[in-house]
Image 1 (tube, rainbow, N blue to C red):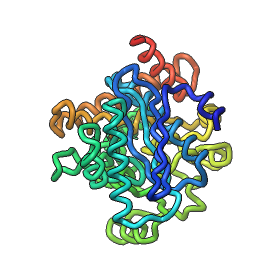
Image 2 (spheres, rainbow, N blue to C red; image 1 turned 60 degrees about the horizontal axis):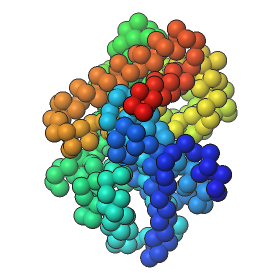
Image 3 (cartoon, protein in one colour; image 1 turned 90 degrees about the horizontal axis):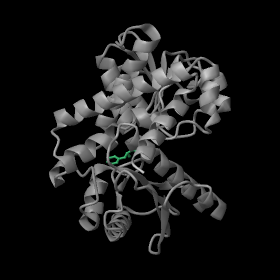
Image 4 (cartoon, protein in one colour; image 1 turned 30 degrees about the horizontal axis):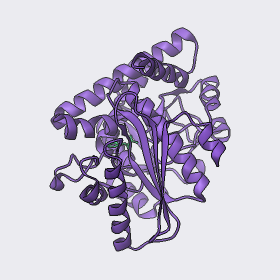
Length: 350
Ligand code: PHE
């Protein structure tokens, strides 16, 4: 376990054991160089403590890069609440309140928001004890709401940039896009794509979601076993991380990968494998930064929703274009180009 932390480049890890539920609370402060460590709270069961620790460390590092690339004055952090046993709704709320107290105790070192397994209503509960360090509360509670829709908008803007590069036309009309995961980001993204005239394909693990999207919206469902081998223009991972790996890359029949999920590449070398197969990769933390830029922008900087959407789409477009240029001119992968850009920004503030 100690080697995992030693080989991590971050600043601090706070570990709490929630006695009443047995859940582990892990808060990783990767970098505060550009500002307070900020990142969502992910809540789910993990196979073991080590897996939860690995996830939070990697996710917090991605947050540092996410803010550094567009030049936002925030640092990278992330929290994982690893559930070790099923909990009832009431117990879950108490756990969130205890977690909120921990966030408040940190006194602004770490600011949180929604992520996989937590919602805006959960942020309302966490804010009861964790305010003012909680972003993404419901509009009823004075927050900017779910981060999914504005994240989807940023991913969509990134896709337009890719289409411009690949086809000389930024429009998504008649492009075939396969969205993996119809959650808060994937769901909105599909609507945006549909409105733009794209052919929308999707996959999800939830049978009721599949039926609704197929029957009500007319989107075509791809069975889980053929997701990676389905021919499309853009494959968009919007569910779990680590799904771009040696096995799936060999199956991919897409021209580009661009999605909302965090940590899509299983290993850094997978960026190289994608590029060898001629697949253009939009680095995940570059195009999925919409929630992390937009929600704190509205809540802490007083942006209107309209301004937030402009800032998000504008900064993601220009960052991605720069990364694609850098990748072409220097003959490096887009993943490496994004890394360099983030490191440059971090170094300039040292
Ligand atoms: N979960 C978001 C992400 O991974 C982080 C976030 C959302 C942070 C909303 C603050 C507010 O980018």
